[in-house]
Image (cartoon, rainbow, N blue to C red; front, side):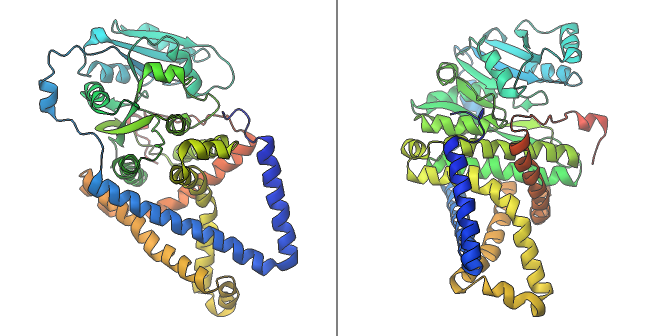
Length: 457
């Protein structure tokens, strides 16, 4: 149950069989085949819209994210805080390592209860030299990750996990600026949650949201995901695809589960699904870690394509034995898993063709309108129109609600323009889908520190 093997033998047989049947049906009755295909796709879009509405409703009115007041922290001034391990995997990030150390020093947590591991790749001599040249605090330790395949963040984290002695463990990326009380709030969140809770996911957002148009769009998306969707997942008891950072774990359980899948390039999503399938719970903590939003389009596409490729990998891992996953998750949670890790990335790939069809229909309606209408008989047409109008309105409305909840008032106007951003997501989806076949374990490195370098586009 890992991503080392992209497709299982059973999946290959199933895919080839499905393709073969589609070809045969196209030859026998191409029109009926296309109609049935459109009916399936439209039904999935409609189900996803209804799920999105349900999640948003639960998140807005019955959100169960854990909120901890400052007064609770004051009451625990003399609390015997447990030991905490911080993992920071770095690769070719010598330029921002000093900033990371400064951000960790700012954390309001007893330093004698901390151990912070800088996980440096063996072939990254520049970052290694930089780390050793610094006067690191006593609770910092440099760990050299042996060079080998695959060269991924989860492999580095698994290596660091072997050295972890803290009761709790958290991952921070090199550019992260966590809220200074986040570790204490996570400890309280664990104590307040049910016994099966082994992960506390803090929220992520960006400190450079207004750098350029791309960072504004990216902030809208992140705000929707971490401030509306993930709390909604918690409210309905669904599996939570974790963020790549600021996820706090009970160390003993994480070690018991074997850590992260080193072959999955979105190891956080995979682990979130695995936790739920093994009977554990994740809760969302109302504490924000501030990151640097990608301000360069090419760099952003590399990052997003890796995320989408990882979602595909996660979907393929847990459908190698779909009956086991269905049994572990239950029917409803399995449906959520299917829509989020499977259908959503796939929809990003086929959306451009549906958008193009819609544009051609209205622009050249006299010439090709009857042909397109022939593939959309009554029920399919009604579902498609409903999905197009109501679905897009709901998605944009959710961006606005999430931005208002986060008090990102300046970002509200960008929520109205998000359909333009979806085009680039589709580009990244195709890039990631092709890489899934050609270079499934290749880690597209994201460049950090662009803000300081003055790179805006």
